[in-house]
Image (tube, rainbow, N blue to C red; front, side, top):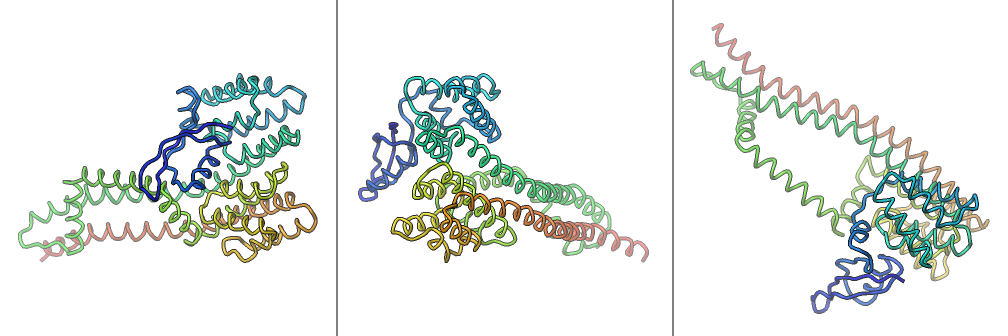
Length: 405
């Protein structure tokens, strides 16, 4: 058991409570506090040096480093090399300084008599609950090497899926930024020249549309610092808000319901649910614990809530497939494949096949969204270009007409 220092709020008195609690990991500590009727504010691992503690909380270690770590340790253990020696070898080979320190500390803890899962628990921001749960199950069954291999595959597939989604969003983001930059340049630099030109012709009046854009141009030119400050504050507070429970619920609801991205994210969550559940069950984790781990790994508070509700029904004796069948957040294939797996005793393989299916479907959805976004961006560019050109050319044509007369 690890010792965590915590700050929580007592809902009855409204006062903050600071104390310590023993738990296997940070999530378990939070659950203990919730069961006591306290609302956790901050939970920190106690008993580590300042450097390690800060590393556990803030160290940024890439997924590819953890995938390589899992695969290499699995291979070394499979070759008969002891765990501590395998970890020391990985620590020497790792180029990431933070990760090198983490692996070295884990090896030291194991040499002191700690289990691998318990040593990993000191770094919850590096090794999530899925990772620790699968390793703990592998230690129970004596299959740590196999557990590491499963984790490597699970992390690799999940990272690949997320990378594809991010890649699909880069192109429209760049195009939108270019549109904003060009429009800002035209409004701030080019339009004022038209105004100067008109001032040389007494009695000439600018079109109303050009006048409106010039007002915007003057405002941007004089108060650009205020605009940038407001945008920076807006981004900062929006980012902070998305980290709150209310903000996360709103953003996660948007992902599930806003077209055209809703189909993409629904399939992403089904793939992640299936892949994680198949991995932890295949490692020997009991069903209820597997569902608890999966609910945290799925990455959406609403889907996680559905998984937790299904877990309650499973605890009451119902099959998981039956518990998820009428849930609107779960696509029909998931409970159907679960039902087949439950009847044949092959839930983990069936979940792996379901994950593969949805990962392929994600590729199709990404292509569909890209196909929709490209013409939409072209129309947007055309409208903005037409608006700016008209606001510049119409006044010039008007002046030409006055000169000719």
